[in-house]
Structure formats: structure tokens, C-alpha cells
Length: 121
Length: 381
Image (cartoon, rainbow over all chains, first blue to last red; front, side, top):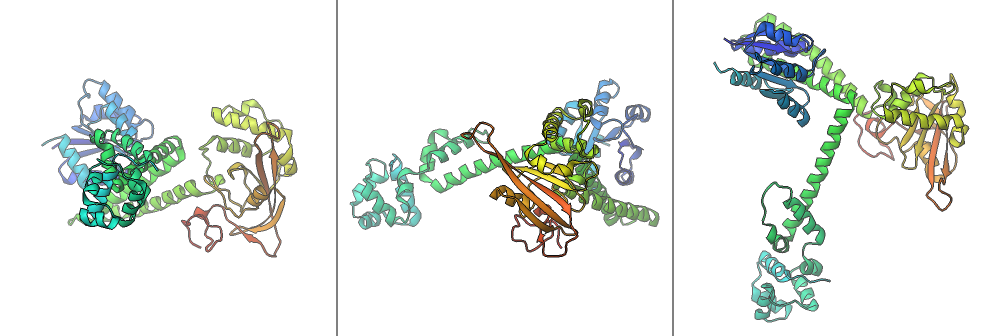
């Protein structure tokens, strides 16, 4: 089963997403801040990253840019979550190389579907 | 009236819409059927008196029948066609507007409306981007909503949830609902509330007022170095007000006591549009952060009538003695435009007699009914 690294600083959102994905058979690791997130991705080596856009320490956009600059993680599926659905955020995420983009609030079914699409079983 | 080449087309469309036969219309107007036929196919110019009779029978306006869609409608239709949303037959635009003036007007009006909405969205986007507090508040609310939604769905849809998980999610839900309530309250306060409620400056004026507040609204000894942390626009505005406050002329001279160390009095100054350009708050008399203030403030009576106003006013929780007056200047000479401002000194009052009931701004004023209310309040008394 796939391994999801969830980079999210909101503990209740993280807990809910972990619960939803775990019940679907995914292994979920939570990393709660922006600082050190790139190193966490290297260390965990997940199949997919769920990345919050606004994080303490370093923004999701910066993290994504650094991931894409690393040849080992250039193709890693990244689902970005943001509470700001402005087109400029979406454009920034796409420019940084996001795989998929979702705005908060999202439904549990939506996030499950997106993860399944990113990592076909 | 300019009768266009498509008048006949409009006559025909109108007649058909009313279910009239050509011969019946011709008879009612007093012309031959063949003449009407030529008119309807735009092969004969319609005489003004015939057009007037046609309009009367067709129950419409002769000008609309003769001129069809106005130039502005055609311009708006051309702009709509150029928007790239579809590929309309631009060469048949006038024909379309002539045959279906109602639809043409609707499309033109919707194009204009779309443009206005586009501009509003851009402005809101801009405000969200450049107002860090608003952006933060919205993020807080949306994050809390996201958590509530995900957690509530788990509780509602998971049949085999263990009591332990159920307890955890219930606790999360409780925490998020409180956070959501706090976030919504902060957002409402930010959008509609008093200027003093928010420590984050969102405009040059707020930067300037925050700087003055930090100095106790007393400018003696102020230096350029103190403005270093402000934006360029904030610095410019602060320098301008610093000059005015130091010069102490006109309105400032009248109310200089409010700007002395330790003064509890509030002071607001507005320009001729009623916009508050200077806001020194005082406890119990909240000043709006955005938008217009309460129209019942004596400040506006002074502004409108150009004479001093003294009044006792009652905010929802406290009373105040108000003195206001307006001042006009003609910077380009008496032949030039007048620049008028008004100022209002706000002092706590212990009086017990009659007082004018005022508020901060309609959006957060609970007074109902109010003779001067502009819009509904988000609060209820």
C-alpha cells in the first residue's frame, strides 16, 4: 500500500486526513511545519505528498519549488491544499510544478479520490 | 428622430410578436398592405407620421421603432463580441439589434454587468492580497471550516468508529467550532469594526495613525527616523500630517488640546466627501475602519452647513460631548475649487439630559429603527 506524507500544520485537519486515508489502506506520516519539510520528504520517501500551501517556517510553494529542483523528487506526486483559492495561488502552484491542487474546505471523498488518482494501485 | 435602415425589420418583428396580420396592421394604420410590405422589407423609408401611427398600433415607442438599439447598446454588443467568449456574427450585429432590441439590450446590459463584476472581483482579490490581516483571518476561518467539514463527515459516515476515535473527533469538532466562531468574529470586526481594534495597519492612513498612537498622539520631538518602518505611502502621509499638526492652524488649532499628552479626547477629521482622514479614537466611541461613519455624527452636520455644532451624543454604552466645525480653503485662489474639511472633538460626558443616539457605522450598529440607516446591520440589538 502507498505511503502518504502529509505536511500540514493544522493538527485537526491532519488527524482527519490521516484517519480517512488510513481507513483506505494508506500509510500516513504527518509533518507539521514548513521548516525541514524537504528533508522530511527525502527521509520518508513517500509515494505521494499532501502539502499545505501556508505553513510556518516555509511556504508550500517554496517547498514544492525545492522538491522539483531535486532530480530525485522532480516527479513525486504532490497534492497541494490551500485555503486561498485565488487564481494567482493556483498559477503559482502550477508554476512550481504541483500535480494537483485543492482548496479548503474539501470533502473527504475528494481528497481520497485525488490521492488515488495520483498513485494508482 | 433618425430613422434607420432597419426600421421595417423592427416593425415586422413587433407585428409578428403581437400576432397581427400584415393586412390588419396596414388597415389600422391607414396605409396599403403593399406599402407596409415594402416598409417591412426595408425597401421604403417610413414617413414620420406613419411611424408614429405604427408605433401607436404596435403599442411601442416611435423612437425605439425608428432608431432601434441605441449607439451605446451597439457599442456594448461589439465589446461583448470582442470578449472572445464565442464567435458571434459581428457583420449581422445591427440586424440582430434591430430585430431583437430586447434581447440586444439584455446582452449589452449583461456584458456591462459582467465587466463590473470582473472589476469587483479584481478589487476584492487585490484587497485580499494586500491586506495581510484579512488574508490571515480568512485563512483561519477556511482552515477551521475544512477541519469541521472533514471531522463531521467522519463522525456522520463512519459506522464502526470506536468510542475512543469518536471522543477524539468530537473534541476536535468542539475545538474547531470555537476557533471558527472566534475567526468569524475577528473577520467581522476587521471588515466592519473600529479602527482601534486591529493592530495590523492595512493602509497608509492606518500606518500613520498607528505611529501617532504609539507617540500618544503628540508630535513634539518626532523624527524622520521614527517613520523608517512605514511603507513609502505611509511615510509620505505621516510627513504631511506631521507638518499640519506642527503648524497647528485652522482645525488643528481649534482642537489642539486633543493632541496634548494624556488627553482622553478623541478627534476625527473628514474631507468634503465625508471620508475620515484622521482618527484619534477615544474609549467608548468606536471609529469605523473602512467605509463611511454614522451619518448622524455632528461632524457631518458641521461639514454640510459650514457652522459649528455642539451636541450631546449617546453611543450604545457611553455618552459624549461633541464639538464640530468645518473649515474651507481655496488653495488656488477664490476662483479655484473650495477644499472643505470638518473636525469633531469627542469628549466623555456625564450629562444626563437628552442626547442624540449615534453609532459607529451602519454595518455594526445595532440601533433599529434608525432614521439615517444606510444598510442593514450584521448585529441585532
